[in-house]
Length: 257
Image (cartoon, rainbow, N blue to C red):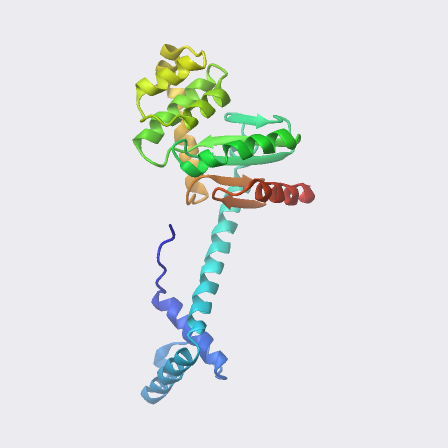
């Protein structure tokens, strides 16, 4: 759900400047209001008020423009963080890698195992990995939805210690029972894992460190939610995008190589 956007005083000043320029005046977007006489300020307010009454879309367009600029700035800053720490993103060798471990198309997925949108894209990611033989998909678990997410995230990473990351991930994220250690034990036993060892590994420093590092990395790109996909250092795509959208972003990445 998107938060409501209320323009700040600085933003409203920008909007005023934009409205005046549309009305034929040449007023700097961030002009100091003290440079106008009281009569001029009153006239400016009346002009802006009349313009907004005549065409309310002026304000909506200005706010939309500012939102677009803010989004572009956020994406630019996030990609700068990715470029500065490539070894922690697509080139990471401390995370689970799906697909071709030597692939040149490095994509990172940040996901929460309790996130319904992350569950929704699981099958699409399997199809993507199967069809793109040069894809190196680095999976980073970020338990952002509370204690139950932390519990499941620890279990999935612990399953990796028994070389069953993907199998256990699918089984656990497909299971609809209430989160608990007993549920994790049951799922582990169902797919043939050593459940006692898995429960023990869930508390290991290695698992705790991996989750901590993933969360810090997510913060470095101001992660808004899960799933979020990082395509090399070219594009960050948030949300449960479709298989076609994933392929389009991958094709764009391939062209840049």
